[in-house]
Every structure is written in C-alpha cells, then in structure tokens.
Amino acid sequence: VKEQALILSQWQTDNLPVFIQSLNNLLNSEGPNGLPLVIYFHCECGCDRTGEIGGSYMMRYRGMDYTTAYSWDEQIAGRWVLPNHEFAMQWYCTYLQYALNMNVDPCW
Image (cartoon, rainbow, N blue to C red; front, side):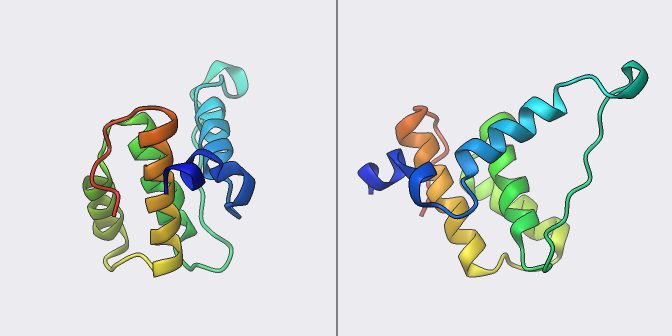
C-alpha cells in the first residue's frame, strides 16, 4: 500500500496530489480587483467527485482526519459518497500519511 500511495500521481485518474495543490494555489491567489477568490465546483456527472475533492482538500489544508472529512462530505450531500470516489479519497489520505507525513488516520 505504501509504495502505491507514494506514486499516486502516476496512476490515480483524478491525480489528487496535483489537483488539490493546484486548487489551494488558486484559492490563495488574489481575485479580480484584489478581492478574495471564491471557487464553486461541482463534478460534471454529479457522481461524488465534488465530495472527493472537497474532502481531500479538507484533509490536506484544513487539518481534518479522514473520518471527519468523510462525515463532512456526507453532511453536505445528505448521503454517503459513492464507493469509487470514497476509494480515491482513501488513497489520497494514505498518500498524505506516507508522502507528507500527515496524521489523517484512519484512512481505511
């Protein structure tokens, strides 16, 4: 698991290590006329990529562990996250543990 987590960017379709960093860079840039930048995002098919991205961001930049981030996603959506996006979030959680030495336990 550790070896796969460390190379997550090489095989994960959504490439969360790169995407979440890019999202953070965008959120911390100055918007038009010096105003704060606000981002609205929603996945194209409505199949929970929004929860995957939101939960992953909260783990990386807002200090949530996996369980808290997943509960936060469920609270907003009013339902559970579909399994393929839950797995993506779990793999990103594992990446955060091994690659960035973050305490986001338990991921699985």
